[in-house]
Amino acid sequence: MIKLLVGLGNPGPEYEHTRHNAGFWWVDAAARRLGARLAAERAFFGLAGRAGHAEGPVWLLEPQTYMNLSGKAVAALARFYKITPQEVLVVHDELDLPPGQMRLKFGGGHAGHNGLRDIHAQLGSPDYWRLRLGIGHPGVKAEVANYVLRKPPADEREAIEHAVEQSVAQLDLLVAGRMEQAMMKLHPRLPAAGPALKPPPSAPAPDAPSGARTSAPVAPASRRGAD
Image 1 (cartoon, rainbow, N blue to C red):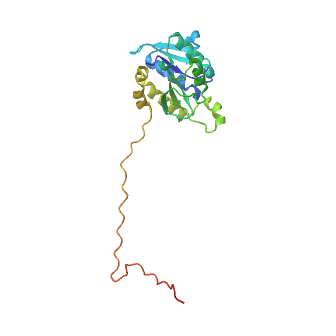
Image 2 (cartoon, rainbow, N blue to C red):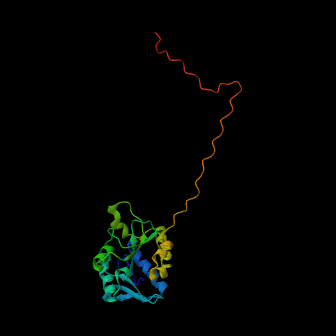
Image 3 (tube, rainbow, N blue to C red):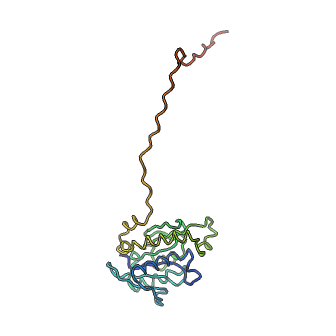
């Protein structure tokens, strides 16, 4: 079971609509679906709320520590309620996926994401679940810092919000820990391969006109040995 849903982002109105706050957008949507209210919790360094679920109580958290110190909030709540890393789902923006796509995965590296880096350090383990929400890549590594802190254009925001809606709709599977089923719902399906196409039949060679030579011409005899 997932007992803690974490969305990553930066606090403050100036960051509210930026790409880096996609995790906050997700937790806001999850709170609405679960009927939870987020409120400031000083002990957990963030906005937190608790929701009842058929599987048991679920906590939602938006760290207010700024992205680089996200682990401080996650670890504080997890330790207080004795939640293991395997019972945590972190939702964050993902440069390596286009807007509108998402991936659910367990464990792995932080891939340079500063929020994940700090969660790794504070939990003492990378073995927690992540939902990666695609925001696209600027194409140049030097532009990444500015890119994630800018608002996406309307079409990209719409695509990200669609991914948020699709994934929040699978909350029951996620909270129950039925991750394989959730992946089948969340990951894009590749089109099924169709039957192999047969090459068109080659056209028959035209009939040779009557009396025409059909055999290849005979090469002249070698003059080997002739003076």
